[in-house]
Amino acid sequence: MTPDLSVRVGPLALKTPVFVSSGTFGYASEYEGLVDLSAIGAIVVKSLTLDPREGNKPPRIAETPSGMLNSIGLQNVGVDAFIADKLPFLRRIPVPVLANVAGATLDEYEAVCRKLGDHQGLAGVEVNISCPNVKHGGMEFGTNPTAAEEVTRRCRKIVKGALVVKLSPNVTDIASIARAAEAGGADAVSLVNTFLGAAIDTATRRPKLSTVFGGLSGPAIRPLAVRCVWQVAGAVKIPIIGMGGIMTGEDAAEFILAGATAVSVGTASFLDPAAAVAVTDGLREYLARHRIASVKELVGAARG
Image 1: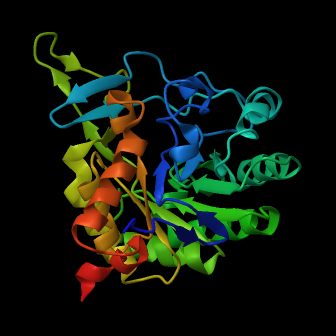
Image 2 (image 1 turned 180 degrees about the vertical axis):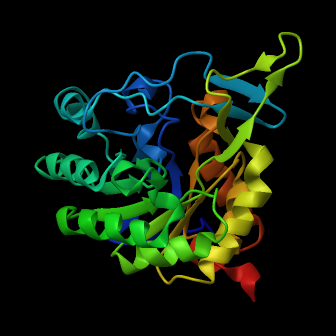
């Protein structure tokens, strides 16, 4: 018996539940020839902003025990260059592609979504709500349910394909943010983004990142991410894309058992460009070993 890995995330019909995460897989063309892109469930490209961004000054990556800190600062080519230079390649990939959208204001989110909506080749948008909301006094969209619902609602009016909202774990109650995204019209939520952390070089006695603080990812955050998925699964009815330190098929199964419909591989791709394919193979082997006919049977099974 070959287990069925197909799942549905909102309007997306996926042959496998394993995505690659925004910011860890570039614009996919970087992996051509290294990875069988057709074996991935869906690809989420590097964050896009209205204008190009150079990001933060180096150093902006630091290795940590069982993980890494990054403070890239949303470096990207900008939405216009993405449409002109990156989208033609992405149109040829035989799996769904989502654009990750970031902005400092509601107007910027809307503008990027509107530009993307005028072009074919994208299955949907993942809205990154961890950026400062300057028009609301610097408060982050991802930490305020009212702001999270509003940005989701505005993007929903523009985005015709799948609308996924990516949640920050740096909040007191992630379930309330997820409920706000659901109320705003999101088809799904993805969680979690990186945890805020810092590292100091004891030889130089200086922070290892130019910005001092950065986002912690990798296996170190997996138990925290699984906890977040569990909490959100009990709070919303829309699908969850779980992420945070997934390295193996069994890691993926853990998130799905907690309530995720799909999962996303991030930091592991830096160690092995084909990590998402390996995780997919491992998940298939897990299901076969336990005589589970479909991965859908696993969703939330640990919740009783």
